[in-house]
Amino acid sequence: MNREDFPMLDKDIIYLDNGATTLKPKCVLEKMNDYYENYSANTHRGDYDISYKVDLEYENTRNLVKDFINAECLEEIVFTSGTTESLNMIANGFFANYLEAGDEILITTSEHASNVLPWFRLAKKIGCKIGYIPVDDNYYVTIDNVLKSITPQTKVIALAEITNVIGDKRPIKEIAKIAHERNIFVVVDGAQSIPHKKTDVQDLDVDFLAFSAHKMCGPTGVGVLYGKKALLEQLEPINMGGGMNESFDSENEVFLKSLPTRLEAGTPNIAGVIGFGEAIKYLTNIGMDKISKIEHNLREYLIDKLIKIPHIDIINLESDSGIVSVNVEGIFSQDVAYYLNKYNICVRAGNHCAKIIKKTTGVTNSIRISLYFYNTESEIDELVELLSNKDKILKEML
Amino acid sequence: MDPEVKREIIMDNYLNPKNKIKIEDNSYDKVNSNNESCIDNIDIFVKVTDGIIEDIKFDGEACAISTSSTSIMINNLIGLSISEAIKYIDNFDNMVNEKEYNRELLNEAIVYEDIYKQNNRKHCALLPYIGIRKVLEKYSK
Ligand SMILES: Cc1ncc(COP(=O)(O)O)c(C=O)c1O
Image 1 (cartoon, each protein chain N blue to C red):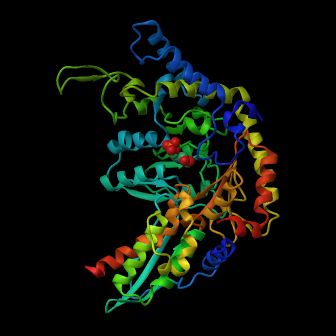
Image 2: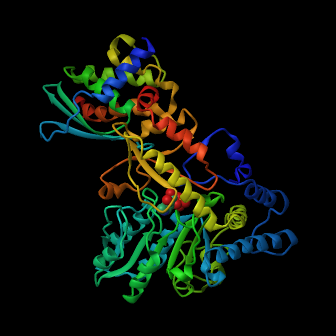
Image 3: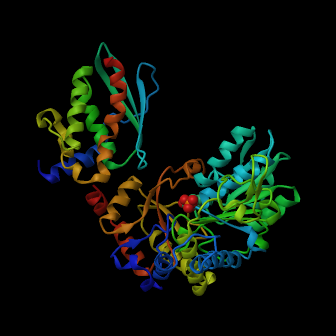
């Protein structure tokens, strides 16, 4: 549905790599162009009309994000360049000052590199431990396993709400409850969940949340760091510079602005943030529950067809998102992706930045089909038709 | 060479690669070759005795082009002296990078003569050559 809104969908391609990034509707592009063409000025400097408009639009996106995830106040919404930067800020700006040697950070082996490597570095620097919550036979994180993994040293649990290879959804609300009863912080990587379902950070009661605009119909280079206000107050800026300081005379007298500006040093991605606001309006107009439902139906439709093909191994039969990871028996995933590319079908081959996932699934590589609301059953039919003929794949993959 | 024959040679070396076996033997030098832009990842094991390549094996996960290219390369290199092998590798490099090369020297590896047309697969064909060059250059010094 809504296909006419997306210029990329005129291009005669079948785009099934929405886990990597999503396509952008025309309204988002127009909104960004409008900024560049009609009120191109910097933020936070409202001395003249167009500059004032920039501030209004920029802050309007903050408001839209706040409502979109139901944050308590605007100070809790910090703009970053994406999930990766947000997670690094959380690790290096907050936990670097909070954790001590011997403390434990709990993650899983199915996390994206962006929710692994910042913790690895921190652990090395401080002398903390990294613990892994085991997953069940369907690669799910169960409450039981969370409880078993927590030790007296556990100080933070950092998880994707939905993972990018398996697409499993973690019971974040329950995990947060258990964690908070034990004075453990909860960090959520929302890169794959915020674009696909309704989110209420107050209901989930997470401490920090990171996500990217480009995976939810917005522009690249924009993301959000959400944190509970009291925690963000303690988060030390990684970047120092213009826009975020109140005054400075000497090295001992630097006064920083208040949240969230304190954490947004330098000229931000203004066009991106403004475009992101439009993307949120766009998704909200469709309705997040409706988006979840469409994706769910498309996934069921795809699975029902793939399951009948004997040479297709489905890695994640169970999943709560539009992600389906598969292998064609005996054919390297990248060759399958090259083959599909010949028919203008875009899927991703590889380990999807989750390099330690092979510990979880025993499979190093796979092709990932990731759906969004604008995909259609007829696109799936075409994909399935191409995958159902193994001889054809072998014949045409070179 | 007929494109269909080329295809058959590549597919045969992909589906039934020669010398593909992991070995644990200290008399072999081991080198890992992986492709930063994709997911190919192979280990190559080389045994050099008195300046002659006595044996090569490989192991790992890689696409059809990389796997077949490794299998064919190994077949061509076993028995050569270090300097002959480096000459062979240079020649293959030249072919893939559209420089002047000697067709006669390549044997079966000529099946990749058109690979330069697929920019995203050039590196797949070259992958094993990059790894083995590292080992051989150690011996040639
Ligand atoms: C689960 C998950 N976390 C983090 C990221 C990183 O997002 P970004 O590259 O936008 O920073 C991704 C994107 O691929 C992801 O899927």
